[in-house]
Image: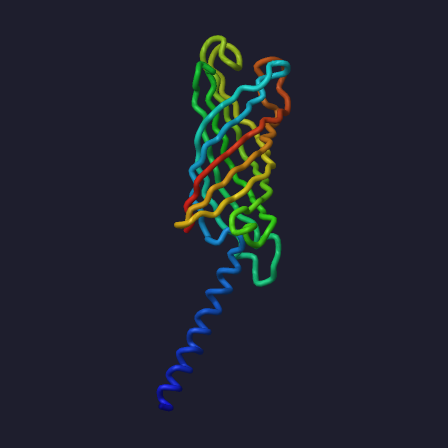
Amino acid sequence: MRSYERLRTSMLVASAALGAPLAASAQALGPQRQLLVVEPYYANIQLDHGKGRGRMSLDGYGARLWVNLAPFSGSSPNVIGKTALALFAHYTPDRGGSDITTWHYGAELDTHFVDYPIAGRLDPFVSLGAGAFRTRASGAGGAYGAGAATSTKFAFTPGLGVRVPLANRLQLRGDAHDMIIFSQRQAVGANRTSNNPEFLAGLGLTF
């Protein structure tokens, strides 16, 4: 009987010893819950078409690779524990005779407002991104003037969004950004800094 009691006590102690690091690790991952996320997404850009010319709606697709920074934040709660870093790229092809294709690529940081999703479903965040916005206009009388032209400019993209965790390691994300393009070429007028609303919706797989 004593042997049985000792065995049971040893098993309880071992379970507690193994469970503590696992619980700490789960807490350290913050609102992201997992270390990596691969996320294909749909993108819509409301591109500034030049002074007095309104905006051009461009639809495309892209992908992001997220790395949760919480495991690198240490044991004390801090902002890094609620932050993730992503590399992203999306492409909008020429559709409907717009004569313009674009690439937007770079990196972004998302910082969540809460440690855990609200009601287990809503996980809002603020986003800061930076990268390059590349445009290629082609064709006589195209959107950005006659002949082919390629331009790559620095773009800063602050924004807001929400993450919705799903079953089976899936998650939905929706983002709204202001893509601020510096010295952007315009269809009409001189180059200038422009504000271009950008909307993203993606389905991610966590690892």
